[in-house]
Amino acid sequence: MSSLALCRSNGFSGKRIGMATHIKKLGDEAKVTIRMIRQDARKQIAARGRGSERAVQEATDAAVGEIEWLVKAKVAGVGA
Image 1 (cartoon, rainbow, N blue to C red):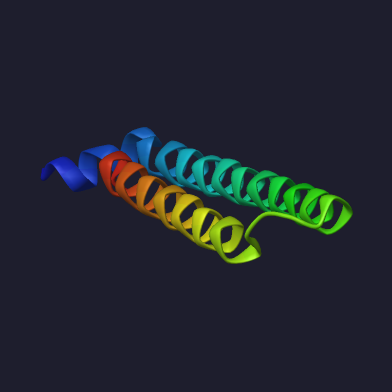
Image 2: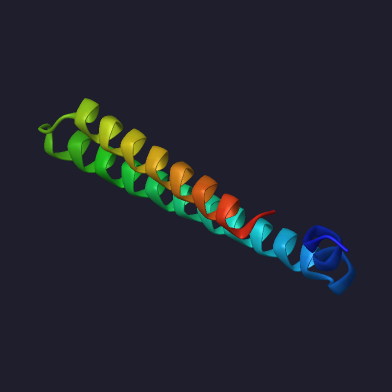
C-alpha cells in the first residue's frame, strides 16, 4: 500500500485539507488587517497634509505579497 493511500485511509487527507483551509483563512484575515492599517495611514496623511500615500501603498503591497507567499509555502508544506 502506498503512503498516499495509507494517508487517505487513516483520514490524514481530511486533516490536511482542513489545515490548509485554516491557513488560507488566517492569511485572508492578515491581509484584511494590513488593508485596515493602510486605510488608517491614508486618513492620517489626509488629516496632517503630509506623508506619502505612494509609500503607504508600496508597503501595503509588499506586506500583502509576503503574506500570500507565506500562505502558499505553508499550504505546500502541509501537503494539501
